[in-house]
Length: 343
Image (tube, rainbow, N blue to C red; front, side):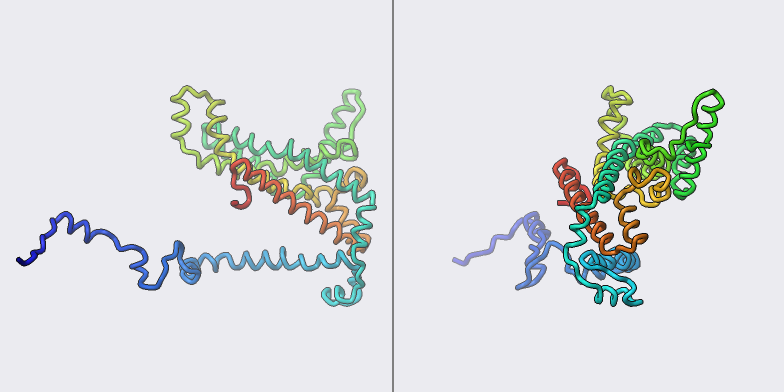
């Protein structure tokens, strides 16, 4: 008795034919499938984007990373007049080891600059950092687009002013011969000069930063607010949430990743509180109130020609700033945010 083959049903045959082959069979014998394309394939796919970013990468390498090699002068008694070539001057300058760092830690002027820098950082973190968020929420709540655009332009305009112009404006208002002082004298009071008062210098610097750069931060937060779906606001309104509830449960959670990222960057930039702004006003209030790390490095390196000592102070500042960025980014990860980079 011969065995006859039982034909399969059409449905079973179609399912067999439509079943895709496993990845290993498609790759061929002896080839292991990979979860991502090869480096050569990715390069060919993204070559246009890579060419577009190449000039920016070269500029960053040239002006941000190449000068890092010059930190070697922090361990030398660097003399730039040994040769017209800076590299030759580094090679012929005597080594002093950690003497420059020992001098820094024993210098009371350095610790005064550290104290002033930290005071300005905490003031700007508390008084300046929340201002762009509040202004962005205020502008975003304006219904008329024309009014919103005008308000944003007015707030953003001071960002294009130089620090010389900003300080001149404040001098005309809060200086000894300013409008406010003249108004007080006309009404029988003593005039005031906030521009030369060491006790209020930190608040003055913070006020200048708020007036000049708050509009710049508004753009980032408005862009984050624009990505929030209107359906979320409508759903919250249908659930009975008022304006403040919608802001607390919809708007602020949408801004939280951006706030976390900018806060990490701000903490990493804690030891840089405005070199040009403070240098222009340093002589008016004295180094006791206005000396920060950046002006300390400039004064010792450029004015006093003590390049190794200034480079050591700048290197300490860079290392501490890097540690602050890593620590702040770790805190952002613990809070569930991405921060500067992913885990």
